[in-house]
Length: 162
Figure 1 (cartoon, helix red, strand yellow):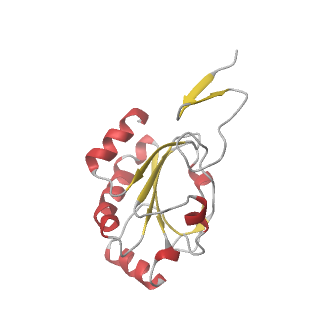
Figure 2: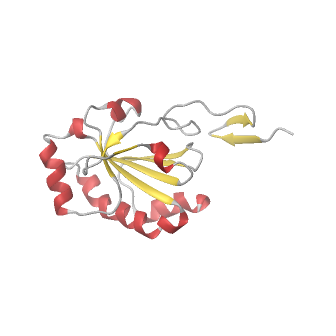
């Protein structure tokens, strides 16, 4: 028996898998990035959980407003296998000190990764900030939110996956 799965209007069967890409229904590219503490982390490190991956910069007003919400979601849903990854677009920052000062003023428990070389920005074709990817347990992008997320919007989009 061959199982079929429909994602993003594309039909996949159990003998094929979605291509890697940055569109809904595709397998999210895995890139390893450093965290503030120096340890590296990748999307594969949280495979098997639902991932909310948010791209942000310290000068971005909508990013600043949604940052506490993302950290709150990471804390509230950690028991339900949800991980929030905050990816700082370091190549978009004025200086790396700006990002570190931002985090010093807003301590968080969610992992913060630093795209120092712009590798993630290029791979995910980040055109504006903030941008948030919702990635299921299999690593498939199930939704993309361009712009600021609100609690209502995020809960509505997460509900089918929790």
